[in-house]
Amino acid sequence: MKYRKLGKWGLKVSEVALGSWLTDLSDSAAVETARECLKLAYEGGVNFFDCADGYNGGGSEKFFGEALKDYPRSSYVISSKVFFPVGPGVNDRGLSRKHIFEQIDRSLKNMQTDYLDLYFCHRYDPDTPLEETLQALSDLVQQGKILYYGVSEWSPVQITEALGIIKEKGLRPLSVIQPQYNMMDRYIEDEIMGICEENGIGIVPFSPLSQGLLTGKYRKGQPIPEGSRATHQADKQINKLLTEENLDKVEKLIKVAEKCNVKMSVLALAWILRKKQISSVITGASKPSQVEGNLMASGLELPQEILDEIEEILDYHPFFRKIG
Image (cartoon, rainbow, N blue to C red; front, side):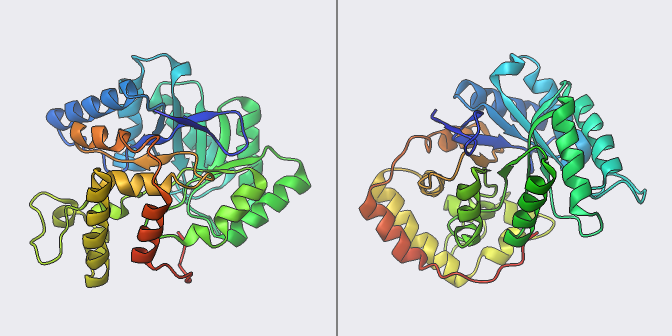
């Protein structure tokens, strides 16, 4: 496993991280499989584990808390997020000082730890003054409850405005962002990546395999595999990606992966890590074999001719994308 700095900051994170957005905790067998995945990731050098207060209704935080307590706290980096509703109350959501302060304590309790290494604003909150949110996060750093904070799925304008307020008020810095980034969704290359590089902000993207599209399991002219995400995902995100154009690109990318003697998923992760601005890529895994595959992406440098071939296949052009 290779490690990279979180932007310009001193914290080092594994190139491949393990997330818990879709971690199945529905029964004892599923929990045991999740434990095996986490153990395999940790033993493979993964030191960054990402979570959120809303995943599995707080169950993912509790799972991480139980599973990671067997390891020295100094040996791993753990994160969570705040924004989405966690209850019926009018203040059980958003980025108000009240909600942030209440949720950090709940997350710390769930994870059985005194501090979180990273804490993210899961989305932008138009109902709360940005100054209020940033002051609350800065205060949590001052209190030692979090070490670094960042945002997920904020627009370039929102990030830039936040950086201006932080500088003006002398607040603790915004150190990391967690946007969506993969071969099929490259919007951060247009502005956000440059903003982060200029300000020393680390980038730890989620959905690196585009909801499973870039695993190679979904093939043109073939039925959707039984048990795959496309058969059960409630919001049908993956189904919306199964277009003729995308599946044509996947067929070509599979041939490139074969040329490199790696799985399609490994090629997709290594392609993201080609960018020096990327600190770590957040992967998911529903079985140990997926963890093993994801780990292979760390340290894999794709030759320039391969990168050029991929670029030709993707044929990317900047476009407007709704963020959040």
